[in-house]
Image (cartoon, rainbow, N blue to C red; front, side):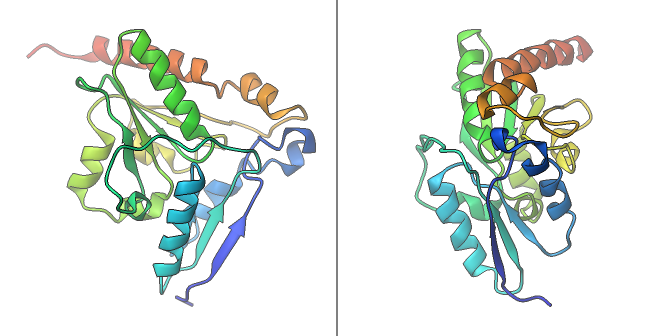
Length: 221
């Protein structure tokens, strides 16, 4: 109908550990993103939630869904201007001092995991950028040069506690996805994230392997 309707959905991932796999919506994000004209927001913290709400209010001819976490999430450090970066769909949350070796892209509660993985990689001598991607639809609508700047040329790792869905578009042929390939299980959230390999340590290990593989593919000029 092209009207502004705002849906707020909670309990967005395998973080609902004790509630069992039937309450863990591993497929819902992919299904929502397949709906035409719908803005799907998965904010990383309280700040992104407020920014996503602002975007939803401004979308006069589009419905929106805010997919929120049940578990408490840390407020992430930011060092850039006060504009609303969620309005661009994705943005560089942190960039290394040197050239990127790898780019970690994540949404929601997994952005904090990507930040921790980048810190691990820095201690191992690798430069990792972290990109928060709260809204695929808004990012797809950005100019090509902006998207290229955010995604970078380094290998990309996507992190989301859900099935892959549309992630391949942003990761490229050589990128890797860290997420779910099936339904969840019944256990505390921390145990499930460890069981399914969605941890900072696992992301850092996959990033290291991806960087090594990309270097082996490089052809000397």
